[in-house]
Image (tube, rainbow, N blue to C red):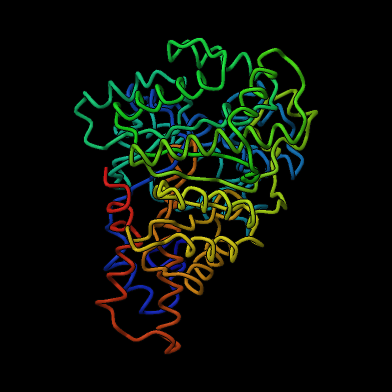
Length: 466
């Protein structure tokens, strides 16, 4: 009998890895502390009609793969039918071997739908029809999809102007899985972006403040942080190329801000000073409220301006950047630490060349006040695959303490992405199991099993303290 591709011991290469995964990691609940799920879909308990709607729409990982093998945009983001789009994805899947999409695709089919056939052009129609039949059943609603994988918490990502109406209603509902939010103020920080003044007008409306000065901007942001905090938020997130931290004075920032509000063009040096000032203000405020701050660093976004103009951002035209990170990041964290205003912090990098930079940077500011206060976040975006996760785990092991690591997240817009936690846990257990087999770690299942359980779940639960 041919064994299913996704089986009980998938990626687990010896008895130690199997024991670690099955006895200490597999049953741990999921804390997904950073994603881009729709809180409205969770509130409405949305039901999807087919796999295209829940699995392909919005997934720029899949879109990039489809474009690479020559699928026309009509069948990716265009006006083709859902079935046509799915069949083009099915045709693409065999070509994704050795890309994480191949593993994720078959893990997700197996875990949510008990489908163990390999997805390809031949099996596509059958899989599309059988999963559509399941999806239209209420047992596959958004909330039940989260229940199927033992989710305890999901933390979505919202702009400061968001009303949080869906989070507020969810908090009053009987849904047992906690749904929280992360405050994402990138549009406030990036003053050189087009539409900045229009955005500030919206921010002012949401805060009830006419943002005419830099102080008024800070007042508006503080008001929104207070609002988010009152509605259960304890996390913020920032997606930046790099932390551009340079010296500034308050008077300089007010002049720069008023210049922008008049619609005048800013010099690069002025942009860097403003970004430094507003980010420092935000981080000091996060510390005051006891939030966890996250920094996703290193993406080179929107490279294809022709397609950006057609489809907009977050549609698959981003890549890894090669920005200088260490010096400015150190100066920023040190400034906060010197004021005793450095809150719990997670650093994510997108360039694997920076793994050791991040792994050593966190040690500079872990001051004994909190276990794992400053974290090197899990492999992110282009790095949330087997090789990327392994390199991140090795870097944090070699230069820090993996035992204090808070583990995996999805960073996804898809309700079917949660087997990425399983994928990470299997990779972690296999890494440790291999070292036990080689005699590089002791055969102490009680202690190493506890470490696995902590990384899978306990460390995150303690760290975020929801």
